[in-house]
Image (cartoon, rainbow, N blue to C red; front, side, top):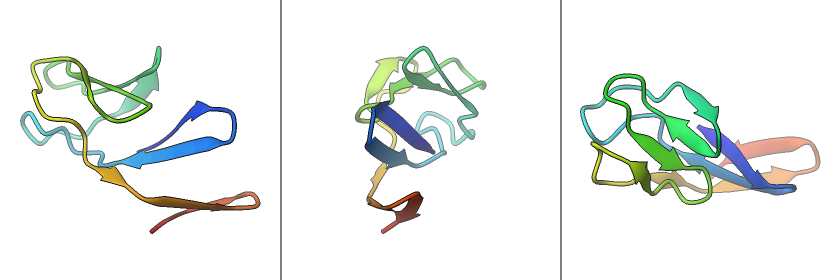
Length: 72
């Protein structure tokens, strides 16, 4: 899951919710949302904004080059 918390700033996180392993599916209102049990994670750092999840989404490193974004 790739987010843009601020213009020109990109973050990437695992799309697997640490609560029960469901895939997060949408980004709205500044959070990454899991449809299974309603957990929400902050787009800026993947931390829990609303449970039941208690662990953040795992962050991945991204590299931005021109118009391209790559993991790693």
